[in-house]
Image 1 (tube, helix red, strand yellow):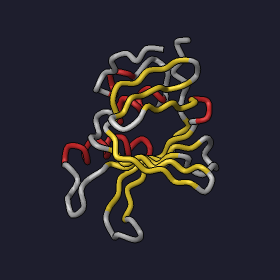
Image 2: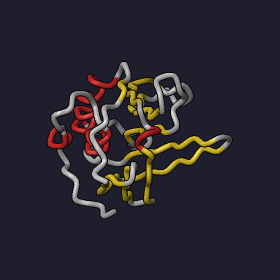
Image 3: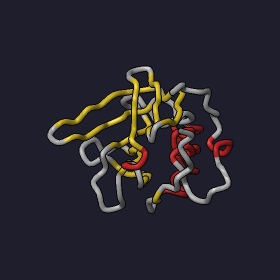
Image 4: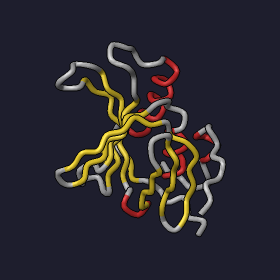
Length: 150
């Protein structure tokens, strides 16, 4: 499966199907600058700062290249997405992030935060882009299938 060039505008990826799709979400990530990705698996937590690059779909997976790693995500296991705008309990800092879940009642398997350096404020443009997504995702959304070309 080749990774094709992906539009930077999430609106450009909206197809005729209603709802929020995998493709729309991953296209939106490309517009949000540096991201802190936290993956939870059993007793292990993996954390990386990444720039989200080109991505594509094939064989039931989203395949993406970041500047830190190559990522494969089984789309049939990513069925629910929620955005959060909170104050972090330990640091007292505002955090903006997404929770990726299999189902609405499942624990998140992946958290994707907008990154900013310690003591810095969010870039106003990135904060605005997040707010647009948050308007759709704050209550959580089941993801609509937008097709797998293979």
